[in-house]
Amino acid sequence: MAVKTFGSEVLTSSDVNTYLTNSGLVYVSSGTISASNSFDITGFSSTYKYYRLVMSMKRADSNAASVLYCQAANGATVRTTNYYASAFFTGYTGATGVGYTSSNASNFVIGFCWYTGSGVTSVDIGGVT
Image (cartoon, rainbow, N blue to C red; front, top):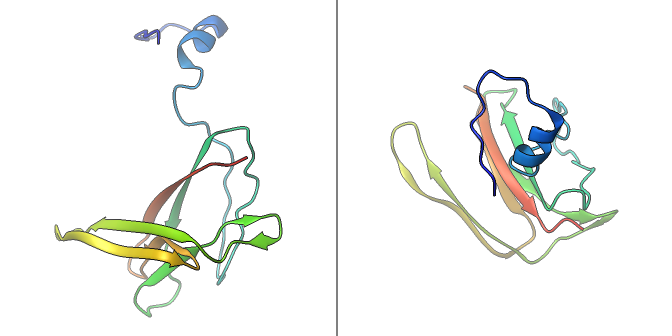
């Protein structure tokens, strides 16, 4: 793959096509969810091989933490079995470890949120056809 160091010059379409095509993340869409127990994220297609969801979440009340679970769907058919996953964590106090595992579960953990501050999580989704 060709590599070029860009300075303060104007990027030409030729440079973009040669050096920047398929070289990083492409912003697709955003949305806002408020006071909801569940929500759908739609619009995945075969345009990209992988999608990355980046979410910032905060509980509206002060009832401790919430675990956010996810299920995949193909149209209206929700997959409710065969989720295998693990999640690791690092806390602000330096604590680390395995926060979650699942074996043939009905869903998987996509993140956590707390009422004292926004939690940021991301998940990569592959295999979209």
